[in-house]
Length: 216
Image (cartoon, rainbow, N blue to C red; front, side, top):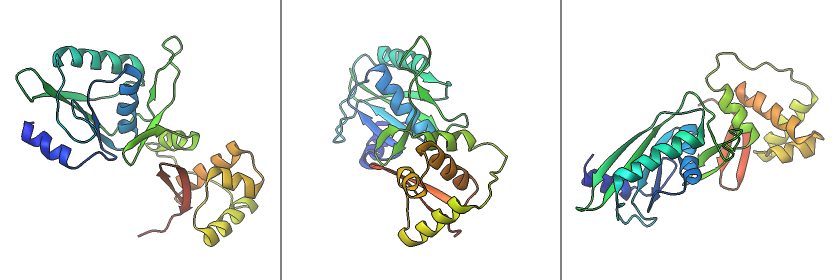
């Protein structure tokens, strides 16, 4: 990729599949962005590009790439595929392009506690990486399984469909309240109905919600 290619990429602005960082961030923050891309259809991380799109480059790009590899190897589970490329900006500065494909091993998590490997998962919403909900994690775990979802259409499901026909959308907390369910039980039912193709999950910066799936 050339500098002109990078300029065209930057001109698109940050979004679901593109993130700018002026410098290589701390390991956990770096892992967060890469995990979010892998869990959300893939994307590009440009290191050496300011938030406003100014291409400044990073110094010592070889050392930065080494730090990049170390951070992603240590702070992501399960491991995922990614590539990096250095694009010369000036005689002393490069942009590092990190390309992360959509993963078939999702969900991926960042490792905060290196002793037990624990940490949260992230997904991409608009131009932000946000912590994945238990429902998003469950849906990612089921995404590449061949087994379909089975459920009985009972009182809770009927109540939900009537609510959605009237109001259009519902959150997990909202469904738990109207159906008098624990949050975990409400979330599990919404996941099952989403997996069965009855509902669609939608993500936005302020949270997730569910709507009736209508075939196009």
